[in-house]
Length: 331
Ligand code: NAD
Image 1 (cartoon, rainbow, N blue to C red):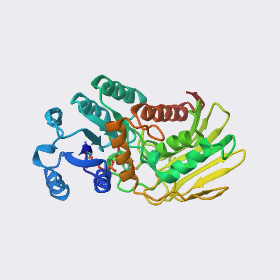
Image 2 (cartoon, helix red, strand yellow):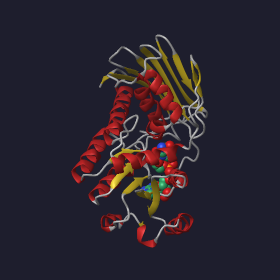
Image 3 (cartoon, protein in one colour):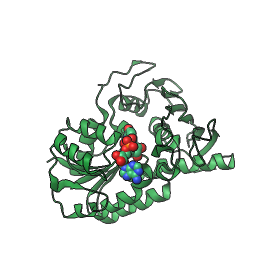
Image 4 (cartoon, rainbow, N blue to C red):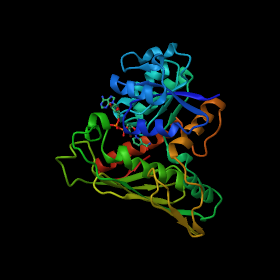
């Protein structure tokens, strides 16, 4: 059987996912939820979506009565995820939600509970958790090939354009670069080091307070401490392009990846040589794997469930708190 998916939010990333799903074996795009009738028409003809599988933001609770849709992939602005995911869960459909899963951990926990109560899966769109070169490094670390892990560096950023977009609106974005791109370094620190951080420190720099309003972070440096004594040092920014680098060092070896989370080929090497795992379309591999999780209870190589999403949100909450108090926050 295939996982029959409806996409909610037909924007830039929704389009990328839809195109990648054309090559999926175990997942299929069968429906849409959108506030724009003209986009629905275009998607219907492009992907062969029947009228009965098209919804808008007012009527999508009716998806409950549609036996031909198994799951909804929520790909809307961050601030909308919480309410939309809970509505999908209450309609009895599995949910895949884009990162950040919500705009704070409290919201994330409510989403986890709503999905549990409804008996549906909640997965977060962490495409890197299925990316072969990322897994190549994670497996080497798990096999002890770098020795005791001591240090991770994560650098995540791009320059953001149009000042009127939702990504620079606190209500819709939940914050700034940290919510959008910094989260890759947070999540990456966790899967590269293989531990959960126990403390956070963070420092904010804002060079353009007109573009980056109150509550919308431009650049934040942050540090994480792990139970083993390993530390991470990371940068999240909307102020420079081509910032996409992971570096992991253990007592006996290293891995470096650049780009480390971009869509294109992930490139990198370790002290043993270049990464060699296949180059794939991330979203194709992700959606096939998510179909396996939802339909067959398969276990992902790195967790992608709602609890995993909440772990990142707790760290984001702590980073914002650390900036505010200019000190260390214990997790
Ligand atoms: P986008 O602006 O291109 O698309 C957002 C879509 O949501 C648009 O079609 C817009 O019409 C719709 N929308 C519905 N209600 C809206 C409202 N009230 N205000 C504004 N737009 C509304 O954004 P995007 O880049 O597609 O991002 C969507 C989500 O996907 C975000 O959560 C983002 O973090 C995530 N994302 C993830 C990745 C990834 O690699 N996993 C990449 C890009 C974006």
